Amino acid sequence: MDHGNHTWTQNFILNGFTTTGTLRLLAFSGTLCIYLLTLAGNLFIIVLIQADSGLSTPMYFFISVLSFLELWYVSTTVPTLLHTLLHGHSPISSAVCFIQLYVFHSLGMTECYLLGVMALDRYFAICRPLHYHVLMSRQIQLWLAGTTWVAGFSAALVPASLTVTLPFCLKEVAHYFCDLAPLMRLACVDTSWHTQVHGAIIGVATGCNFVLILGLYGGILRAVLKLPSAASRAKAFSTCSSHITVVALFYASAFTVYVGPPRSHPEGTDKHIALVYALLTPFLNPIIYTLRNREVKEAMKRITVRIRTILKEC
Image (cartoon, rainbow, N blue to C red):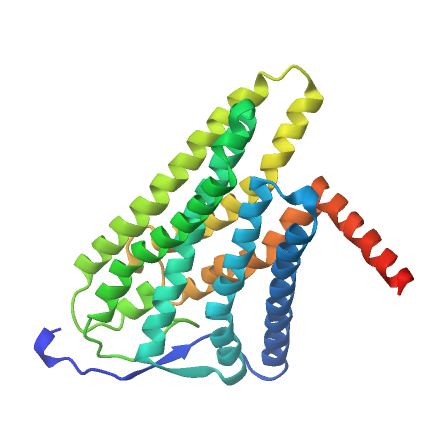
């Protein structure tokens, strides 16, 4: 379309999932339960790590940062998802839409970098055990955690800014939240250049980070295979299994949506895939880090004993 003939719209309409009757109530209730359990699970992880001295290690510090991030990440999109499930369509102002777009991608990029830092922590713990506490001192932990947030919110500025400057002729977003590809489909102009820039920034950032994680785990694998006993190898692998599972969930769904042109898959499929990385992954993370982690289970037992002791004294 001609750039000069576009019509600016002050509002968008989020077209989420079309459900009716009993199915609508079931979808809304199920999503609300998952959302509340996600909040409770991640808050539980944060409180447990802060309350138990046995979890005061760099690995659990980064897990608590991840849980804190997930609280905001899931809360960025689920409220509009719930609204669209209940009402079908959800009007949203352009300002709120673009803020949601920026915050969602900022938190997503932050999580991407944080997963890389967590892999680096495991690499130092297993491959450089004698220097681990120096390499991962409290000051370095705070610096790495802060850097992931700054880098994530900085990296998301360009895609979000380019999307904001697009002229829009249509206003119905085929999604339950404001995302890059659904919004670009509403533009009056050719968005090929925008797509290339988005792909370069998101693809390079996530791709390089993914390669870094693979490289670090390659080093971990070599170091673990050199350990003398099967028990020590199993213990080393167990400390990495939860993180590997989270990385696989995050990158598999993110690459499906954001790597490649926005028209590479049918319109409307984005919102189904988004349920995996925007709702399911934050829900599963606390489960993965608790059910598959012996140290967390032991910490839960210690906290339970302390609570019972306090209640008896009262």
